Length: 147
Image (cartoon, rainbow, N blue to C red; front, side, top):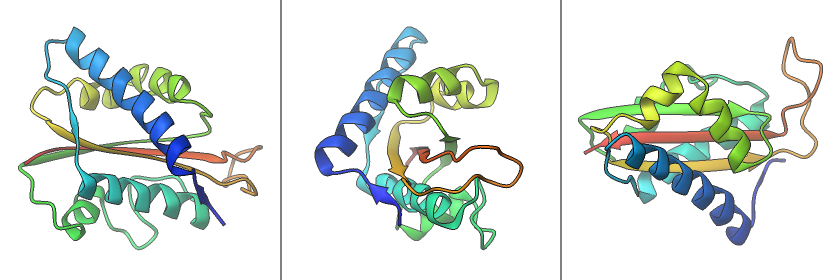
């Protein structure tokens, strides 16, 4: 059973990621992202699904893409993007990974994107994903959108 961290912890790591993302965006001349509850719900749902269903992909097990998951929350957008990560145990770790990845970095520094939802789910009894020698345990999702 996946554990969405207690509100204090979840807010803590998610707030740390948001602060780091917004710092990177400021350095690139972009405005700060604001948190949207519908986007948070979409991010948490996907992070929880990856943790509990033992997969790592932008597509859900049923084939749904992040755009579909965001629409399912009732969010209308003109542009969306998603970053996922697994195995990083801290906000600093996931940010280092995302900023070191061309596609993830591009999403973070896209000035057209204005809102975000961030989630981390911890799966203490996680099993290794196919092809991996160790369990990821930490699953991260950040979705970005422009209304």
